[in-house]
Length: 275
Image (cartoon, rainbow, N blue to C red):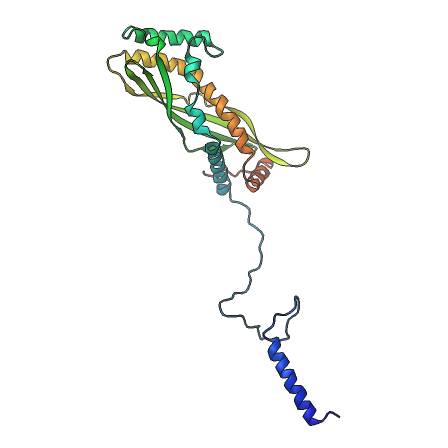
């Protein structure tokens, strides 16, 4: 039989120990027993942790915007504007330049013949400069079967034709669309990719308009001749510079974005609603 004095001492020690335990962290997985219906009090300002929920799939609009935004940013960071500004137009337009030098040289010779009738010796000092290159808002459509994407890449720039003798002769505004086909593939290692299919200039998308011209020269004849030359050489020249850049950007897109897009393209699911 425990003496009453010893019981009192034991109860006092037990009460002191329980008071100390309330201020200590509990071991992992262990909780103090509470009376039925009573919740464990939380410190002021602390909320209960939320249940972890799986990430929701990206919406169709988010996928489309994510792709066009990723492509735009990748093209710009990859030096697209600098590439356009440094197009070797003058080298190609010179007689004997490029793979079709005879044809282009003849066209350029006809252009210069009209101008040199007003200013002798102009053919040796003509210059062609690209200025103000721009990447406009990309367009995105999905093929009817749902397995391919077509990205329209609209480009804008200005062309200034000038000479050392008289300065600026013409300034032209040029717009051209490059269309890139994007396909989804799975390789032998079951890795998924977006790859570039056909990439070309959109037929009829090249637009050339006169911004400024020197009034004393036969401007319309000069404009017609120069437009004829540019129609033959400019689209393929731009295409050859831009398409490899697009191909490189596809390999740098966000992995999660690519995975979501590829899954939809492989299964032919429509996801392009509005960009």
